[in-house]
Length: 248
Ligand SMILES: NC(=O)c1ccc[n+]([C@@H]2O[C@H](COP(=O)([O-])OP(=O)(O)OC[C@H]3O[C@@H](n4cnc5c(N)ncnc54)[C@H](OP(=O)(O)O)[C@@H]3O)[C@@H](O)[C@H]2O)c1
Image (cartoon, rainbow, N blue to C red; front, side, top):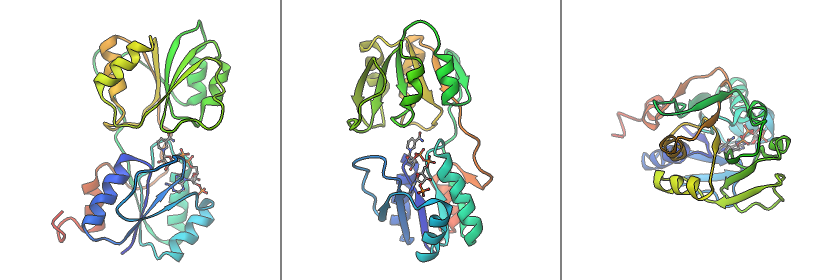
């Protein structure tokens, strides 16, 4: 058995830790979007594979038997590539995903299906917006240049931010409710825009927004590709057949 973990999430790191502790041979893969990714306790590679062909070749060359797609729920391209490469090579594939966030009483969420719809929904007078979507899709928001955008990014941006009015804060989760409440108040935020990432590392802003009575524009997840999926590291271990015999 040899496992390839497609990472870039808290869940992928948690899985790598347990897999390493269990002595299961494994490789970890980062896309390379972040300047200093978290070190992993298993051998790690960085960078794209080169589409489905490249991933299929990588799986074969490295004698991978099990592929765990623990990428972010919005990393749609990678997840589709994983399904196609696993089909082609006969490697077993499992998705490890976080459950999406769901609203609770007090939340004022407006759901939109994608980034473009979020941009459309921001038509109107200038607001102060916390745009918590990472750095990849900021260009789309140039269609609503009237707003002041608070951007929380993992790295100091190397390229110019395309938005005329913005503030950048560089920070990496997990975030706290106290910290996010203070951030929203300090920057006079009127509305939060975010992706429905799920999990506990980034939900502090939603709790803080609820407490402050702020609306949230929630970008819903893209449809996942057809594949098996579980939501916990233990379930992945069970699938690998290592839960019982390794005492995990
Ligand atoms: N999208 C988000 O909101 C978000 C948020 C937090 C973290 N992340 C993490 O950031 C990374 C990139 O996300 P994305 O949305 O840009 O992905 P994406 O659009 O689905 O993938 C684009 C390309 O990036 C490469 N790639 C993605 N994940 C990879 C991985 N783990 N290892 C090696 N190559 C990978 C692949 O290149 P090739 O075709 O060349 O193989 C893939 O086709 C992922 O690891 C994801 O977990 C994403």
